[in-house]
Length: 90
Image 1 (cartoon, rainbow, N blue to C red):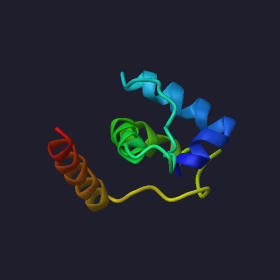
Image 2: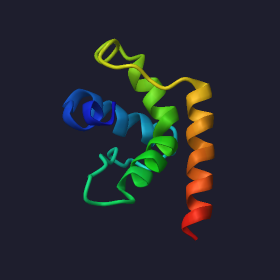
Image 3: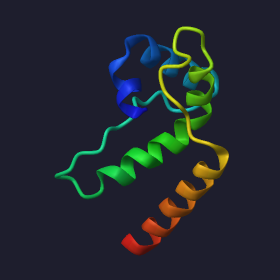
C-alpha cells in the first residue's frame, strides 16, 4: 500500500491534498529499507498519522480497488506494536 501511494502520482496528490484538508502533515509515506533497522517503525508511525487521509484516498474513484486498506482491528494492533517498540527502544 505504501509503495502504491509513493509510486502513483494520482494517489500521492490525493493523499497530500486530503491530509492538508484534515490538518494532517502532508508527508509522503515512507517505505522501509532493509539496511535501516528502524525504518519499518518510521514507516508504520507515519502510516498511522496519515491513516485518516489514506482511508479517504482509497475510496476515491481514481484510486479505488488498487489496494486494500487496513481494518480497524489491524490498526489497533499496529498502534500497540508501535507503543511497545518505542518503550523498548527508550
